[in-house]
Image (cartoon, rainbow, N blue to C red; front, side, top):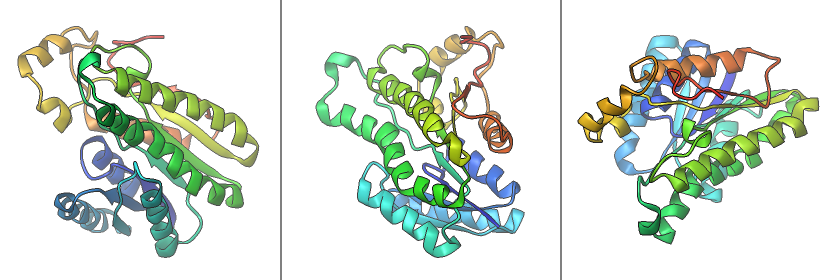
Amino acid sequence: MKTAIITGGSRGIGEAMVMKLGEMGYNVVINYRSDSSKALSEALIKKLAEQYGVKGIAVQADVSKYEDCQKLVEAAVTEFGTKIDVLINNAGITNNSAFCKLEKDSYMHVLETNLISAFHMCHFVVPYMVEANEGCVINVSSIGGLMGVINQADYCASKSGLIGMTRALALEFAGQNIRFNCICPGMIWTDMLRGVNQDELQALAATIPMGKIGDVEDISGAMEFLINNKYMTGQYVSPNGGIFMP
């Protein structure tokens, strides 16, 4: 049985990817940060077992912290062994704040959660992939990593950083059959979008060439493609409805 670790997997895009991994036959390790997320994470693990017959564990870990990433990976190895087939770095937050109003703790929290956590997770997981001489790492960036977004300087910086990290590691580990790729979602229906002004959101959605906001399944489908395509590394795919075409 194959094993996947995914950060930020308890809701939204992460939840959709967890369920797709289960459908693909992976045992899944997810993290949750707060006690309030524990029940949500455990319910997702139960759903995996019921629908797809795979195993999963939920580990309390704040992936912005090095020690917690170590704890998460050690839990995965203890439960499923040292063969880690897939790592999905999906954890992400945003401040949505004007730059001059940003305080140090706020922008550092975004950078540590969105970017540094991926460094931490790769630091602990990639050596196991080297030992196995294969592996797949997918970093969930954003369309914000490809283009500027007002009031998102810290978010865009973190997501652009993920793309640069992905390309560098793809080159470094190509000879060991370890692939690194990115997904850069456009506007996707998640709790984050549902919490903003809906009139403004619909006006923004109207600027998308396809005229609609994407679904979380659009991203989990991209994840499945990147896992299955054994010749793709150092690339990004961006399901975004045509709003950005490089």
